[in-house]
Image (cartoon, rainbow over all chains, first blue to last red; front, side, top):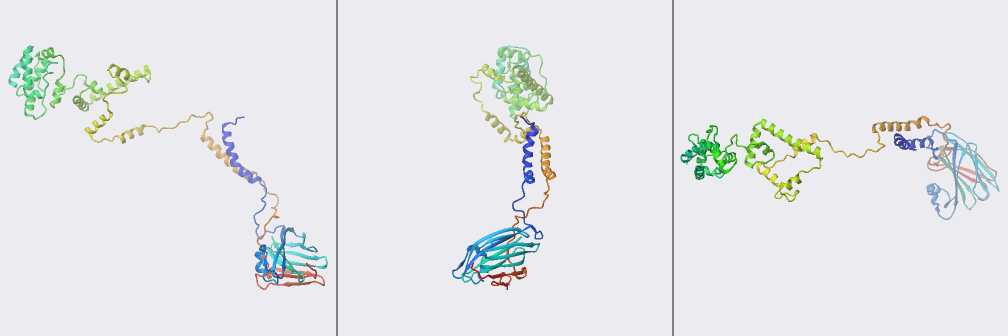
Length: 164
Length: 325
C-alpha cells in the first residue's frame, strides 16, 4: 500500500516522538524504587545476619570484615572470619530460621516496626541446651551484636542489622 | 605663394579645367606652406570647384586665416564661416583628373580645424561600425556628445542593428553564425583566428588614454541590482511536499504524541511495592538507640548485656548457653 505523502512523512516522526512517552507509560515498575522518605514505613524490614567465627590465637580479621575491624578489636578474640551471611526481608509477625552450626539455629522474628524503630525477637536454640529468647527494640537502620560463647574454642558473633 | 596660387585657383574655380592649370596649382601647393598640412596628391579630386573655392577663401587676404596660421605655426583654429565662391568648376576639373576622393575633412582635422562638415557623409553609420579613421572617429564622437539629436540617431541605428539580429535569430534560430561566412568572404583563412588581433591592445589603449580605469564596482552594482541570485533548481519530485502544511502537521503530531500519554496514562491503583527497598547503611546502635525488652534463657545459660560506653561502641549481648558451638 502506498501511504499518502503526509502520512509517510508524519508517521515516522510521530512514532519517533511517541516512542519514549509510550515506553514510559507502559514500562513496568523499576526493580529498585527510589528510596523512600524516612517518614514512610515500608511493609517489610530487611534483617541481615553476619555470622563471624572468633577465636583466640591466630591473628587477623577477614578482609570481608574490614569495616568492623575497629569494633572487633575490642573483643577478647584474636581472629575473626566471616563464615555466613544472610539477608531477609520480612514483614511484621514473620520469622526466619538460620542454622549457624550443626546443632544451633537462630530464629529471627519481626514483631513490629514503625517509622522510628523495629521490635525484633531473637531465639538461640541448641540441641543440647535450653533456648535463649530475647526481644529488642532498635532504631531503624541500626545493628547490634550477639556473642555466643563456645567454651575455650572461641565464639560465634552474630551481627544483626535491622534496616528499612 | 598665395599671390601665384590665387589667380590660378580663381581660374580653376571659374571653370577652367585645364590639366596644365591644375598641375600649376598642385605645384604651388606642394611648394608652399600648405604642403605640410595638405596632401596635394589627393587634393582636388572630389569637388574640384568646391575645393578650389575653399582654397581661395583660405588663401585670399584678409580671409587667409588658415594659411597665416600655418605660416606662423600658431595652430589656432581657423574660421571657415566665409561663403565659398560659387560657380567655379574647379571641383569638376579635379574629379576629372583624380576621381572622387574625400580629403577635405581629413585635411582639416589634421591641421587642427574641426569644421562642422569635416565628417564624411554617413559618418554616423561608420562611427557605429567603427569604420572611421582614428582622427575622424574622435571628431565624430565629440560631435555626437555635443548634439543630443545625433545620439538619438545613433541609438536608432543601433536599434536597427539589434532588430536585424533578432530578426535573423527568429528566422534562422539562435545558432546562426554569420561570422564564418563573413570571414570567408573577406579572405580570412580561419574564422576563429584573426591574425594580429590582440585583446590586450584594447586594454592598453584605454589605459594609455584614460589611465587605470576600474569599472568593476559600477558594473557589478548594476548587475547585482537587476540580477537574480542564481538558484539550484532540483527537479521537483512527484511527491513534493508542501512544507508549510507539513510543518504545521508535524507540530500537531508532536504535540499529540506528547500529550496523549499523559491523557491516557493509567495511575497505579496500588502503592508501589517497597519490598525491594534498599536500606540505608546500617551502623551499630548507640545506647539510647536500642533497648532489650526481655530475655528468657534456661538455668544453665548466662546472658550478659554489655552496654556501650561510647557512642561508637556497639551494644553486645553475651550469651553462654553451656553448649559447644
